[in-house]
Image 1 (cartoon, rainbow, N blue to C red):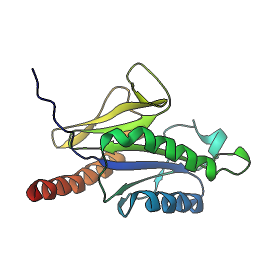
Image 2: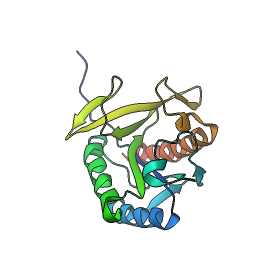
Image 3: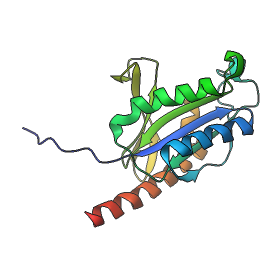
Image 4: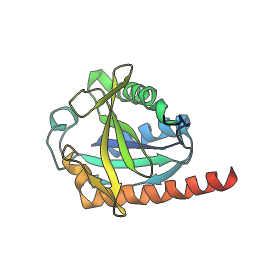
Amino acid sequence: MGQIKKYHPVKLIIGFIFQDEAVFNKAKTILERRFGRIDFESQTFAFNHTAYYEKELGKDLKRKFITFQRLIPAQNLPQIKIKTNKIERKLSPRNRRLINIDPGYLDLSKLILATTKDYRHRIYLNKGIYAEATLFYQDKNFQPWEWTYPDYKSAEYLSAFNEIRDIYAQQMKAINLAS
């Protein structure tokens, strides 16, 4: 019989899709107040791998990722997704969504995203929220699964996730040295 162990803290990562940088900055400020100091902000990527969000958010969309210095318990992901959905609504005048905010977490072996949409490769967590293993770490790089979104397979995104993993690895090393 396996031994039940406490799960290690994970790195909260938030992805944004938006058109207007000012809306992104408002969302980032709200999240920083909630989750603490940001320790990584990606460059702004063109979001051009799909037209899925254009009808709702407009054309010439951008994508960014941020992470926070404070690590979180993995089991907090459903509550965080519910919170980010509320922030999207708060920043949506007249029920027109201006930003997509997607939380997830990263640890040394994988990137997990939270979603409200069920599918065969997603696992139900709680309160209408599912988890998707979007990337796995192997051969010193994050790798996509067959279901991974096309943008998450791009070299630019994978480079950003590898950089975030390096930050997280240093944090975990400091925690283990301190305990």
